[in-house]
Image (cartoon, rainbow, N blue to C red):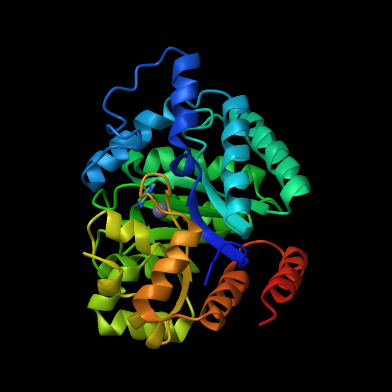
Length: 331
Ligand code: ADE
Ligand code: ZN
C-alpha cells in the first residue's frame, strides 16, 4: 500500500522540531549564525542521545528569531504535511522561543504563524491548530509565563496547552499551576510522560495535571495497572513510534509496544514528533507499522477516527475533517 494519499491526522508535532535542515541552514547563513555541532556529515541533524538531541534542537531553534522566520517555518511544515497526506495537524508552539515569554511579542509571532497556516490551508486544504507548550527543563516559573501567554490567546485556534522537554527534571506536579491556569482558560491539556520516565510519570500526569492526552505514554506497558487505567478512562496516547526507535527506547518497530497497548484497549494515535530529526515522516510511520504489525487501511482509518475524536479543535472543524476522512478512505 502506498500511504501517500491516505488521509492522516497528526496530534503530536513540535513546530521547531519539524524544521527542515535546509531552512535552518538558510536562516543561519542569512543571519551569519554559526551552527557548528548541529548537523551530521550528511546534512541531517546530528545527535546520539536524548540530551544531545535537546541541545541540537535548541541550537537549531536559535536561528528562528522573528515572526517572519516562524511564518516561513510554518509554510514549510504545512506544505510538507499536505504532501504526506496530512489533513489536520496540531503543533506544539513555544512562547519561550517565540518572543521569550513576552505576551506582546508572542501575539506577533502567533499572528504570523496563523497567517502562514491560513495561506497553506487555502492552497492545500491542510488544517492546523496550535498547542502552547511549556518546556519542562526551563522550570515551573518560566512555565507560568508560558501558561499566561496560552490563556491570553486561547480560542478556536490555540486549542491546547502542553509540556515537552526533559522528563528527568522535576515532577509533573511542579507544573500544576500552569496547567490549572490553562484549563481555566478553556484549553485542553496534554503532557509528555512515559517517554523517558517510567509509568509512574503517567500516573502523575493524570493525577496532578489532569490531562486528557499523554505525549508518548508508551512506557505504560511496563505497568499493568496503568494500562488498565488508560483503557478504562479513555485517555489518548500520542504515540510517535519512529521517534521512540530513533532515540533508542526500542531497538526496532517490532519491539515497540503500540500494538500491545492497542490490543489492551488503550486509545492510540500515530504522529512523528520531530520528523527531520528522527528521519521519519507520516508516510514512513504508516508503512513501518503496516510492515511490523500487518496493520491494514481499516486499522489506520480507526486510528485516525480516534485521533479525530481526541483532537482539541471545535466540533465544527471536526465535522469538516470527518467528511474529508470519509470521502478519501471510503472506510
Ligand atoms: N521536545 C521535542 N521533542 C521532544 C520529545 N520527543 N520529548 C520531549 N521533549 C521534546
Ligand atoms: Zn514530543
